[in-house]
Length: 173
Image 1 (cartoon, one colour):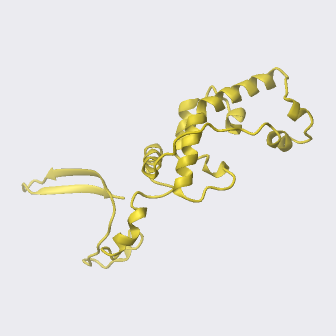
Image 2 (cartoon, helix red, strand yellow):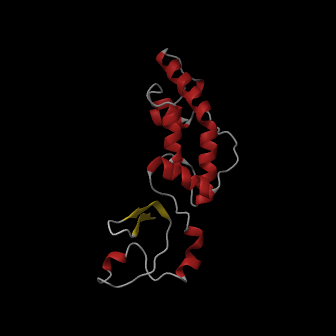
Image 3 (cartoon, one colour):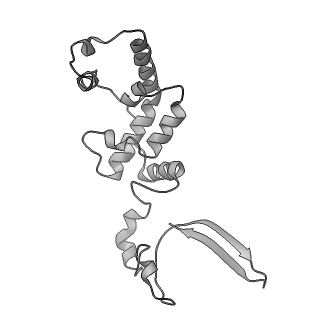
């Protein structure tokens, strides 16, 4: 809600704010701080449900400020920070929490990569039984040395070479 009070809502419309929510730009604003993906997913769902209310409240406060009007709470505050913190508690709409997978998918669609987790995080123990390396250390392998990695293939494409053999290219995330 505070963000919508401070920005130009002509340039930062609902679509922009929704993209910021999807990529986690407001995750750090929650008190107490969000600690796991379930909390993050629930918070983002509430923020998405509240976008229109936040824009309407922000537009009203900007209009009131432009007209020289102020709330009763702001009249008795000494500093700008006190005025902001003493305003009526911003309430977010209740919403069904997003699944962890939905949260990660929206984050990936907004940014092109995962930030708050990875779809395989829940399977790390099982994957460690079958893998012997990770993407951070694969560059340290000697030429010709083999390694077993786990990940999700994206951007897969199959081509036929000039010799008529099949060849695949893929990105491992």
